[in-house]
Image (cartoon, rainbow over the protein chains, first blue to last red):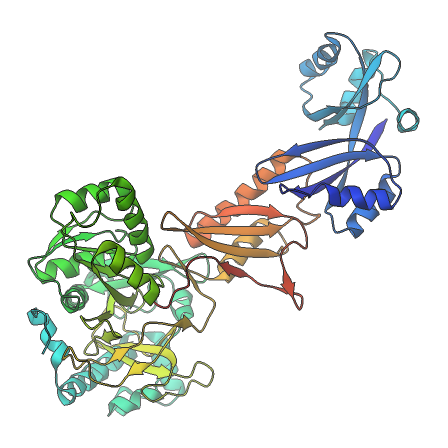
Length: 144
Length: 441
């Protein structure tokens, strides 16, 4: 139900993104999706790969600070109001979305959003109850 | 004799050496006796060496006495070295120490008189008289610079404008409108003022300013040349430290060739910082000072960590007080940031308040608009890293708060990638000083 996401600390300087990417390329690891959060001084590269453990080792060997955390892959109807409908389920339950970003591929008529949620287990239960589909890691990896 | 008018307090600058030494010995014996009687630390250390105050029979006997260190002030925080009861203390000042606690110094009424007097002599040596209007842009407060200069200029009989530091626009207005003839500040702040005055189109030719008295941080002869040329003034270096009295330990005269130490109040020695051996005049070593007249906190053989040498030749200005060369460097790793003494160990202590183990870090000093900037770069470790931006920003804030709490200065904290701070033989270079190199404080 939960996906592993890797985060990499980057300084906000030109060329800093290419270092972890190069390391993954050399190890033959494909990035399924990524998102870059940045402030004036630093950035956080968040990425999802198939073999996160291997990728973590590769990145750490390349000198990166890496953290693995759990995220949810939520299927969202790809139409106006689709995302809002999901948010409307979570909000009344006081479930806080730390951040979210879109997955590049669609599944059928649905978009896929990657969401970092503090209380993931409760979110899973609530979303499921409302018929929102969450992708299993195995399903997710076949999509990409 | 001097080519400047002399304030009566400055007569002591011209004592014949025999007379000076007689005064010094008398005062030294008194200060040792007072310390022995009233400062437990000093008494214990003297007893350990089998020393009694009466063993001090000549000035050279001082070499038998133990040294005092900055850590002694820290370890006895706040009043442990005071030789007088609090009812006799009329003033406290504080400067940053090697850990979170500052170093506290006190003054009796008599100490305040001495301080005012040596600062009056400092200004007199720079050629100032009662006719001068002095803009005092040293910071007022716990820092000794502002009030030390204030009382000294008043004792001289000059007109003091207690404007304190900062607020450049107002500084320029006062310089223009108040008939200011002399200014005191840190040299870096005056450099900023020069730029602001030039940018404002005022120009120095329209100002009455003729003298600058600068101190509290390192500056070079090159900076002096720059200041004198751009501002059309004479710029003088002064030296002092809170532990001894504040500003007013030594000052340049019209010859601008070394700083005269006010030897009737401060006995100086130069010692080899490694062997502790007293060095002869002319040899470079660590300046060690003994306060000869201070009542509240007598300091005996205080290790300043400032490296200099005594100039044995008599100065052409006529003063008999011996001179020291402008301070070339220090024997420890202390930084002077905006006039505040900071040690890398303080930064470490602050970082350790936030993180359990010490991250790799680097201190980067720069100067922006005449003000020192303190940046601390911290290498991100797996333990502190988080995928949430807010958590990392919070961490930066925590580091910055801890540093400000310990050293009293606002620091910019920058998180950097692991291994991005250069290491030589596994050890990181802790301090990068991008400010103009200095030779004195």
